[in-house]
Amino acid sequence: MPLAPKSETVDLRELPPPEVFFGRSARMAAVRETIQRVADTGIPVLIQGESGTGKELLARMVHGHSRRANFPWVKVTCPAIPLPLIESELFGYEKGAFTGASATKRGRVELAHRGTLFLDEVGSLDLAVQAKLLQLLQDGRFARVGAQDSRQVDTRLVTAARGSLREQVEAGSFRLDLFFRVNAVTIELPPLRHRTVDLPALIAYFFQIHAKTFQQTPKLLSREVLRAMERYSWPGNIRQLENMIRNFALLGDENALLAEMLAPVRPHRAAAIDLSRPVALKQIVRTATQELERAIILQVLQNHGWNRSKTAKWLKISYRSLLYKLEELQLGPQSDGDQTAGPAAPSSRAATVE
Ligand SMILES: Nc1ncnc2c1ncn2[C@@H]1O[C@H](COP(=O)(O)OP(=O)(O)OP(=O)(O)O)[C@@H](O)[C@H]1O
Ligand SMILES: [Mg+2]
Image (cartoon, helix red, strand yellow):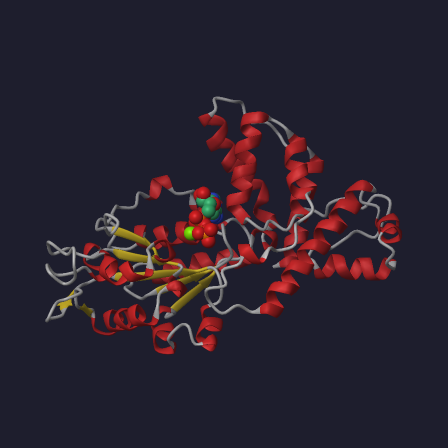
């Protein structure tokens, strides 16, 4: 049986306050500006970004700031619905449309009437469903499975994708015409490692929430941990940061935080990669190599008190090539004094990584 359709409304007070969500980086300031411009229009918005960068939160914000805010917010996690069911889940079905269709059922598109339909991981939709979605975007019409006639619906589409939809278009798994419709406005959420200037505000915010939950007094993080956070690659982005702060609020164990950041990254396992869709092999291998390099360099830097000469010797690479790698892996900029190579001030770091 199809999953029960769900609709809800968005309460902006439950989302992080804008100064926390957008922070101080130039890239997030641009995101904020775009949202302010387009939220209250009916324009489709595509949100791209790595896992945990806040795509869903941003989608909720778009809805919450639009005049549709008092109408339903309907979220569909596309890959979570088995392919044979996705069409009837989205568009509904008429009684007798297929075996088991004992009554007419409205789909999520209809549930989102006057509200917002959020399609998460839109790139996982198959081409047949993409065609129906295109029609919906073109003239606001769709047909329930098994229906003779089409119906009109007024919904705003917001979509999200972790990877690049453009690459999927090139690989032939996403329709070009649909791509041009869904990306009327595209927002790229930066990874956390590119907005380290926002770490202190995010940390304070998560402390405030989670210390309250556990009835703890918020604890301060040591300089060493903050420094490691500024240099860390954050593969799980803000979700990972929130989990770490939640654990710290509960257990107060800084070593656990350091251990997580310095753990060697296991090379990507093929099993962890979605191979049911075309993948960019070169890109995957390059990312895996960089992650491994970054983890090793961080570990050795840590072991040698952040002394770069000793680190370069230990790794049997020249000092120059270590500096180059630090830059390439966005672990820089570094100060000139070798013995005291400490963290750069958050604001100056951000200026170079933005
Ligand atoms: N800018 C932010 N400020 C505060 N919290 C944030 C921010 N971005 C994300 N979070 C928190 O991080 C977690 C992940 O956010 P969200 O679910 O929106 O990410 P996502 O990009 O949709 O991730 P995925 O691709 O894995 O679905 C949530 O718990 C959210 O509260
Ligand atoms: Mg998400």
